[in-house]
Image 1: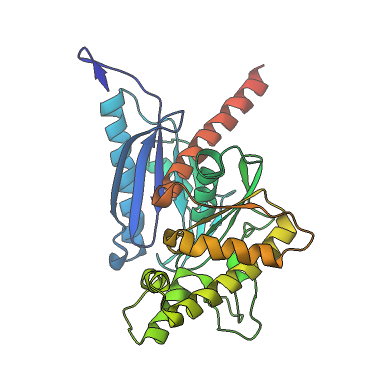
Image 2: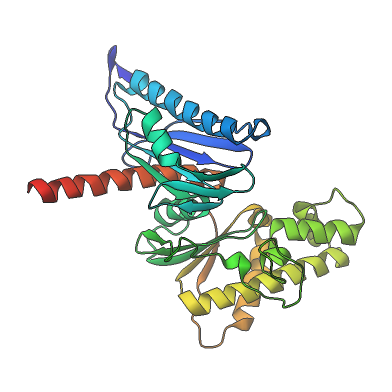
Length: 325
């Protein structure tokens, strides 16, 4: 940003959202404005070490861009990763799609970025943080963010923060058993919600029902809209399972807003109309929440990573004030 040939200094942070196949990145200003964004492949076909080097190199490039464009380096960095994450120790514990175990990612990034403060977060909880603060849950004190994608995860929002739980596993709604004895889940149990109501589950069910191995959840939704009875049956079974899982979560958490995201939510009212009706039909004493689509799409994780970085700086500034005050 230049005015009259002079560089306008803008304080910013680096944000990275690492997925199974791609990395979304941005420089984010203090008010959450995205100043610069970029994407690239993880390169996971070259192995976990190559993925780590891609992340570190990408972060270094973003820092250099910020220095050149805004006259100063980033103040901090935030990174969201999939799998099991130890946020307290800054460790990416395990990610099946990326092949790493016990990776000290926070320390590696800090070292590559010259000692910059780095915040590490879980991808879904980080996306939930963004949806809660600047997306569909903005202004809501308590919400539950549930993305319906390859699997089903969840993020519990309370007072502008995401509840991680005692062991970093809070919100794993996809592993609520809704159909005992049902399909086997990767977690080792049977009948988990994500085996029945994720975008992947609907894709599998519709491929089998339609006889088209290439058919997916989006195709099923289109067939539902066109009046296909077989598609309607597949869709209804998924919505019923989803409603059962969500009502269990509502009973435990009592959120004011339920934010549904991920690939399945792209079906719009084809999903939301029957889902709202199914939830309403199942609740007894519970107060029905607002059930709304996510607002930020695939940018949520990156925006959330930026928020983590700003939160880290705010905490550091507060501690400094307490010590010196």
